[in-house]
Length: 421
Image (cartoon, rainbow, N blue to C red):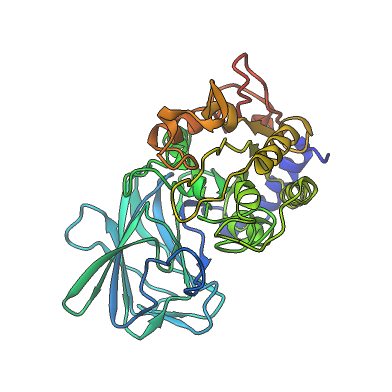
């Protein structure tokens, strides 16, 4: 396996020093929502957002991870087939009734996001503290089809059209908030599915495991970008592109990225033969391990370290709902095989054993009751906190010198990952 050497860190440092015009900029992704393509009524889950908006004003709240003296906002039309016009965008502290600051794009108050593209605002001098909340208000003056969005009930967007105001789960076009930190920093990207996106956690409370990790890393000036999408899969498309397909934009494209924590595969295993993918062939261990190896290779070329999480147990997942069929003994065997490979293959810079953290000691095929949101697939708030706390950010290691990092097994069989700068 390719290992990171101190020379790699030195080479990157020299490359940045060779650009004096950027010497004062330390942009990090402090908040992120990965785009997903819209789907039609043939899919088993509804989109839960309007198919089209007209002269609409959106208000969204985000909680940052790292702080800085300036911010920039990114909006995405990744899966759109026609431009999306932003008429005006304002941003400010979530508790500021005055509405905050008006953004510009290349000096203009509005901008059109071309199909498949993103737009990034000009920097605005708005000092923000770590873990602070911002409110973003966006006016869409033209009829706007929703072809690119972020699905999920863990965060809501307020939509006003005329005299009508409604709230919907998910994100609409807002893609990222970047901060200009006081000193060079790092962004840790969490790449995953609905477990990383926080399904089962308290809505609008920022209790996903990447949120808790951000709280732990805030004092170190390390940002956390959540690139999880519900229905995300490792090797196949799901409710969005596969992780292999979106890795470049959602992970490697983040400014300041140094580490990615990957938790993926349970939907590759659980979807085939279920209402999500009723006619699909079963996944194989070779297919999943090959995809993981591709992610590692792409990350290491860019000097990004990869931590893999083992897949949590899922016996009884979605039983008694219209989506039953996610679990079977055959799928459980594949989960166990993949977890064993993640733990022992040496393919990653580190491993965090989420399975060991979350499983019921009396029945390791199921989530511990105290950590279960109730659907036997997604943890609840306590489970997500336990996941984040299983990542070791305090123990000194070779990371500080730019060298390789390996997971270490503690007596409780919880390999833990060091992330201190």
